[in-house]
Image (tube, rainbow, N blue to C red; front, side, top):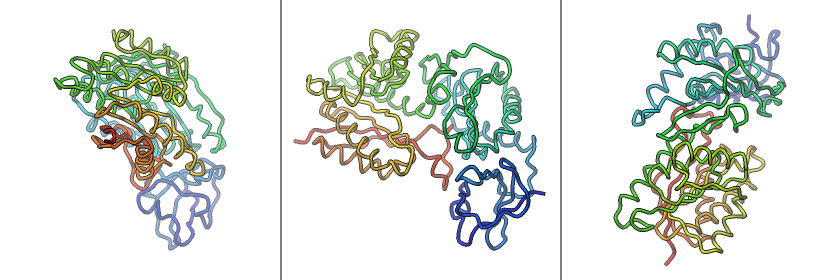
Amino acid sequence: MSAVVTLKKNEGRLLKAGGAWVFDNEIESVMGDCENGEVVIVKDNDGITLGQGFINENSKIRIRLLSRNADTEINRDFFRMRVKDAWNLRRSVMNADTEDNLNSLRIIFGEADFLPGLTVDKYNDVLVVQSLSLGIEQFKETIIDELKAVLKEDGIDIKGVYERSDASVRKKEGMYLHKGFIGDEFDTMVPISENGVKYTVDVVNGQKTGFFLDQKYNRLAMQRLCKSVLNDPENLGGAGTLKVLDCFTHMGTFALNCALAGATDVTGLDISEFAVSQATENAKVNNLSDSAKFRCADVLDELPKLEKEGERFDIVILDPPAFTKSREATKNAIRGYREINMKGMKLVRDKGFFATCSCSHFMTEELFKQTILQAAKSAHKRLRQIEFRTQAPDHPILWAADESYYLKFIIFQVVDEK
């Protein structure tokens, strides 16, 4: 019989609101024997059952909820139900206006798919798995087997699985870092297609699981914006031209979407030489080398240089890494976001467009907007919001689980103060 964890009086508010975590300071007692990683029953202080989840005394996130029903048996059938639900959601909500909409996507997004600590991304016919919680680790291969079976029912054959459980957060769970093949080995340079753009994903050495899938439809939004501007006979740069600056370009994703749309002068900047080489190769694969150029540069240093040289762009895109991964570092992150946004805005010509984002859930939507407004004031620019977007729908946001809402993406028109 499972051990029973009872919460302190007036605790568990987020859990009761639909969240997925119980923190160590919310627990009053644990009745019964249990090992770290085992499933326990969670009860409110008045004895009402709240569900069941994995316990881990190594982590401040003491319990990660699996089910609201304490009578549900956690077995292979349970995990098959979970992965089938996750896949059915993606099939339903991923836009069908591009032929490659299901070529590459996130199939399992941890707590938001009620599989806490587990991420599974699909790149063409390859799965990349990241396990970040002790509880889910013991069921990892069962879940993968069931997911492969569910996909096969839809005519999708998975040729290989690679694990990228090399994130340092595993240490907080008392786990070691690991990456490697699960099953047979395969070529880990995986070709994918997204929004009509082809990429080669390095699932072994690429960031996170190899590629940032969450920006898929934000990249498509920029592709559409470029097409719209180019179709305007009085477009910003003159007939048939469009000058774009893509900062923190990584694999050239935003830059290549803009170039595919017809932008004739696209520059991508990244501090990583490896990223620049990948972006350059991706431009070649898409026959966009003439319009999309990439170079290695520290964006924070490069933007003031470009301004001093008198450079101006029709579109500037900022897709920086998270400036904070903890609540304590938020103040420094605000300064960083304010500085980079101010520098980026100054390079946008009058009535040009500025796309900016934050991928830190500690940088809340309200805080991010306030920071951009402060940056605009410092840059002497006025902003007109065109679109506010978040992560792609294969990264669903579970309300009351704030960590699942992290990506904010805003497109503005920038107007010089006159």
